[in-house]
Image (cartoon, rainbow, N blue to C red):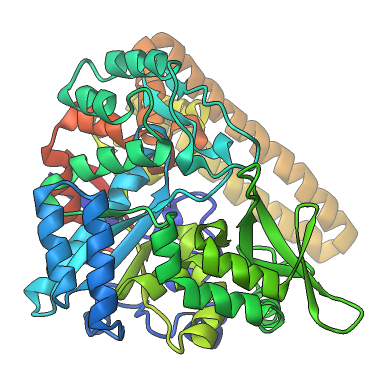
Length: 545
C-alpha cells in the first residue's frame, strides 16, 4: 500500500469552515481564527493527531459505567468488542464516531469513520490512556430516502441498489424491517461483488425480518470484529433513560438554547462561514415520537397567554409538564436533533474524542454552545480519514497517462480531453505550445498599447483578444479530440478513471459502498485503513492498494 497526501481542498465543494478547521484555508487565509477557536475550543486544528484529547474530561460515575456496559453487552456479540466493553466498565474512555444506518453498510466513508475511531483508540491506549472505539448508529433519523439504497460499480457504470421497505412517513428508520424485496438487491450485490466472502456477510446481516439498524450493526461489527469496534443503538428506553438529564434540560431551557444557537449561527454567517443546521423560529432541539403512529415530529415551542412555554409536535399540543412526564415514563419517545445529539451522546458515554466528516464538523461549530451550556465542557472533534482507494488497474492507467488524483476530479469529457492532449505526438504539442505562447505575447503587447491610447479602445481590444484565445483553445481541443478518436483506448481509460475515482461526479468515498471495496480487496482492507488513519496527513489521501 502506498499513499499520497493532498490538501483537503482538492475535493470539490469543500466548505471554507471545514478547510479552515483542518488548517488548509482556501487562498491561504483563515476567515476568522478567533471564532474557530470558540467553536472548537479543545480541538487542535493545526496538528489533528495531537495527544491533547487523550486526557479524559468525562466524570461518569461507576454506577453509570456499569449500567452503560450492561446495555452495550446486550447489543454486541463479537468477543473483542465485549472485551472492550469490560474495559469501558473498568474506566477506559471512548473515541466515538457514527453514521446513519444505510443499506449494506453505506458508502466507503462509513469504513473510513470506523477505521479512524479505531486508530485513535489504539494510539491513545499505546500512549498510556486506555480507550475503546464506539460506533453510534443514527437509528432515530426518519428520512428513509437517505438510507434505503447502496451504490456499487459494474464494469462500466454505477448501479444503485434499492430495497423496498414498508414504512410510515416520519417513522424512525432504524426500526423498519427488511421484507422479501431485499433478496433482489442482495442477489445483484453478490454478482457485483463477484461472490466474494463479504457477500455472505451481507446476506447474514440483511436477512428478511432484520431491522435496518440491526442489520447495519451486525454488518459493521463483523467487518471490524478483530478491532473490537463497539456498536451502539441508543434508541431504546434504557439508553434514553440514562441520557434523560440532557433531554430534560433541553425541555426546561428551550428558549435559552435556541437563543444561543441563533447567536452562534449568526456569528458563523457574519464571518463568511455557513451554519450547517437552520435554526428555525420557535424550534427546539428535540423530536417527539407520536405514541399511536410512531411518527417522529419536531417539537416547537411558543409562550401561552400566561407566558409559560406551550409545545407542539405535529398537530398535538403539550405543556412542559406533560413532556416531562413522557420523558419520565416513556423516555424513548423524546429524542435529540442533529445539534443536540452529540451532547446526548456524551451524556451517555465517556467520550474523549469524536470523529466526524465535513457535515458533522460543521454541526459541532453550532453544537459547542449546547455542550458548554448543558455539560459545561466541549468534546474535542477530529476529521475522519478522507481517502480515495486506487486499485492496481486504475493505478496503472493513471501512471500511463500521467494523471494525478486531483486531475480526475472533473467530468469524463474533460478528463478525456486531457488524456488526448497528452497522447499527442511531441511535435504537435510543441507547435500548439509555440502558437499559444506567441499569440499571448503579441496580444498582451497589442492590448497594452491600445489601453494606452484610450481605455474604451483597450476594453474592446480585451474582448477581441479573449475571442482569439478562445479560438486557440479550440484548436487545442480539436487536436486532442482527433487523438481521442484515433486511439480508442484513451476514451476507455478516461471513462474507467472517472468511474472509479469520481463516480457520479462525486468523491468516491461518498458514493461507492464500502462493501464493494471489501469484496475486491478482502478482509485486510480494514487493517490497511486503520493504518492509513494513523498517518500525519490531515487532508485527503490517495491510497494505492
